[in-house]
Length: 493
Image 1 (spheres, rainbow, N blue to C red):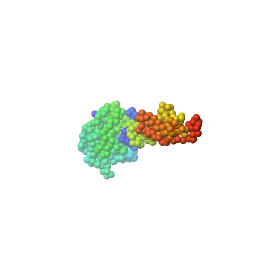
Image 2 (image 1 turned 60 degrees about the vertical axis):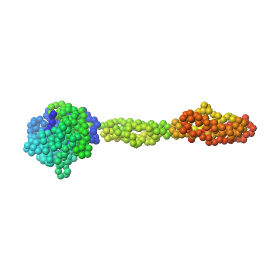
Image 3 (image 1 turned 180 degrees about the horizontal axis):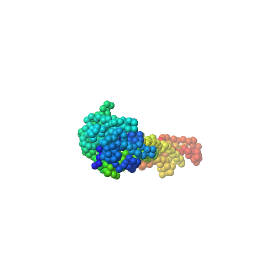
Image 4 (image 1 turned 135 degrees about the vertical axis):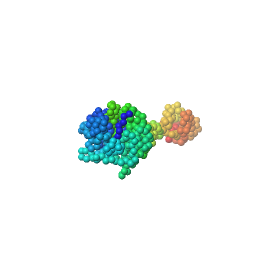
């Protein structure tokens, strides 16, 4: 196992999403320019606008204490975006191990490992230095009560708000080689370190913490949660208190290697970390966060097939975004598509895994209410029967069935019967002839719809029985005169 003694950093996050669940990243590559050398480069720290990169370099003969020393270097971002022309930071390096733990938002205060008391690692704490011209003033120790670091390895991270410090070290309640602790500032002093709980801390080591600006997500390196190799970088989401965190999640094979990966930070849309995946000594690596595709959604509605029905549906199609997706419909459904719908407007909002949303709406219609149907049949003299085998009546009963199929829950058929004033010897009276026509039709219809199993939905009633038309003038052969009054009329409702 290869570990680096010391500290950590602070930076500003852009390009990562809520709770640091960023969508995808580019293939990692060594930071271009002159930052990486044959020596060891670690622990990148950026000014708030990312214009200055601070980092540690070890095993470089140019260091204050020689090649076995660790010093703080810096590089200013060039117009082409490269970090070149690396220089030692004036005023903060000595013959002991030096490191930047964080930088104030205005860029005028550096938080440093406290190695300024004349004896290596005597205090095992941290200090700060204020900018003084082109250099930095003498670092001043910052006291954290109760901080008692055992062993050689430890590190710090000053959060962006400058009121929270995360510490990795072997101390009280440590369950492994190094655990994570937190100290907060109450306006006048720092609190004693608090152990951050067993969800984060394992029987291995947890080091190089980095806290997102809104303090809800912690990145750290560990060899105790499984992974790709010697040490992997994980993230965990705060669940309320500083001692309650979600189960750590590995950042994956693009960032983690089979060797030592640690000191993860992000600045703007850039991710940085240290790794010795290609060499004996660590280099600083870079990956870009990819912009997630915007999410969109389209709704395609399928109308109700019959009047009063409930077989409409809406199919939603999502494009872009980051799966998995969740759906919230105006009818409280949570599925991607909805069915069994009546007429109305239905809207949905889709939310992707990183909180992007999109909405669409569909209006479901139905056929117009089925129109009532009528039939009128004219009889020859003394005729009173009409069968459904007759084309006219067959079309009528078929239309009634179609009404039911298209959404009518029930149909009432009114029978209106008429006879003329031409005398009838067969039925004795015209009243009896008109009545017979009505009765015969009622029976025929009831028999037919019973055979179809529709007696509960079709009601047949005799609405009127009439004798009407011009008075008889002994001209029975004048059929045109009397035929219009020899009929059965059926209407639906």
